[in-house]
Length: 437
Image (cartoon, rainbow, N blue to C red; front, side):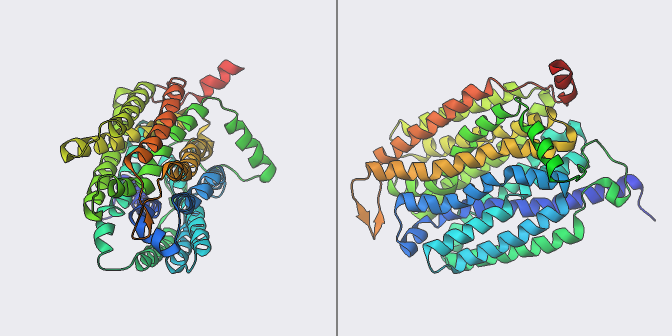
């Protein structure tokens, strides 16, 4: 018995989503894994805290720089071509990183990984805007980030356990092979829009016509001139930028140096934070859809995130009864950034949803690329010269100085959240243009 058009449509869009979300899981694994192997990297390449921060941030430098080009590629070339090429490049970069004989080669590998994976999230969000209705976009944004965060969860506890069996080099070579395989699968399965599979379109968020670089430049300038996008950029810079810097690099060394935890125990704390982040992504996306309010949800999440840094920095905690809830709260509250993506889509021309999401998302990775080495620099400034097995050992006050830096960025994000435009969960780009005219 042949399937009905509705059933075929649902199967097609969820299969496309599955392939894209598998690619997005590897993005998070690539992003967070260096924090788990930070000790091995420092020992292998004989680095300082600032140098290790720069190595990890290499990924974020190129990721941030590629966000607007990623939006242009997603809108002009479509999801399929962009994601396939990105996965292949990321796979080759991870293999190079795993085989790197020197810090310079490892940095080149991280740069290739960042370049390749930089397109995956924006393309996934663009695909969601085409294959799913506007009323479900907040939920789909949260679901994308929830499932994608499984990659970061796997980069914490399971990777820490795996490192007792295989080397960090073998692990990165293996994840490179997985990324290449997903590139091939994307070429087979992913399609840019329903019309490519003979289905009717759900919205106006179709592929923008490519009429030359000049026209694309004008379109990008028009999107970038939308002042309602930039508060979301600053929110992501101050919240998720700091959270990724801590989850992706400095959380494990903090728990090792200050709390004296072995890697499995430290990884358990990071897993709790990552699970809180994953669940928060789904909750805030769903809750803002249900409440039909974006700004209030975002403000509440940023306030909680700022509070979590104060809770982590102030008391000299030693008990898991205190530590686990604080780590969970920081991850959960930091996930409120999810709301900035529906807002970006809802204040912009639907045809250029990729560019709008890319601009807002860029804030996260500019923030992380600056905060990872800045946090390491603060540690080096306050370091008292203590070494353990050839590694720099930082004290509690060194990390507290870094936490104050993160809290300052979070306070900046809170100010920006007050300027976010309330959309009522609907596209208001036309009304905004009419008001300006």
